Length: 248
Ligand SMILES: [Zn+2]
Image 1 (cartoon, rainbow, N blue to C red):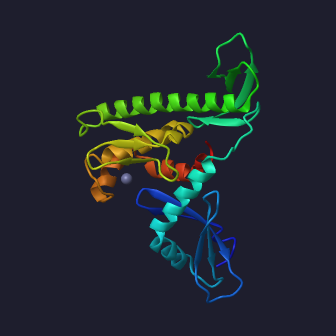
Image 2: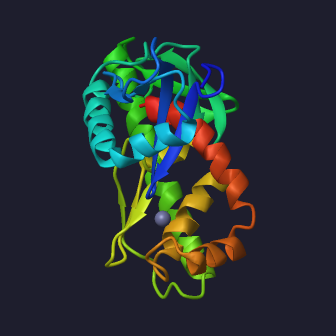
């Protein structure tokens, strides 16, 4: 194993993505050790002679524990300030980047608006907390509107979906969506930052679970029929995942 070979590795645990960084230890023959950093990054110390497959197996065996630790670390981390919320910072919306622009104007209602390449935030006074609150409320409203609309459109288009399923938006730190056995969809509001085709892929994936609750061959056959390109889209979304999950 070389540092270059497996600097960043990703594995799938159900619908959950676990990505981790490998750090070769000084001696061979030692055990694989898994750490979860305060920001939720997973670091795996592995002996230099370990095979990647063996390292992955070790992480997979402890996947439930790793997942739980990552969720806990990320929710603690999420409570910490991450941005300065000043003009010039990038914000992602449906796969595009918008530049944050703070407009101080006491005569206008405080709000956030997308126009051109900008996410403009009108405030009465230049206060970081106000900007943050307005931007988060804007994302939330956009997520509710867009995700509901796409679930409705796809529910109409897919023949096995009889009615629009109930939807819950819930921030989750390592998955995009889920479908309960009773047919309730849970979607991650962070999806509003991902490209449109990725939003659609996640929604169709979950709606396919209304017909097939597992990830068996029939499930993938159905998904293939409605999102032909889903493997490419999924790879792209997986590559974006770390950046998007770090945004809030
Ligand atoms: Zn699934």
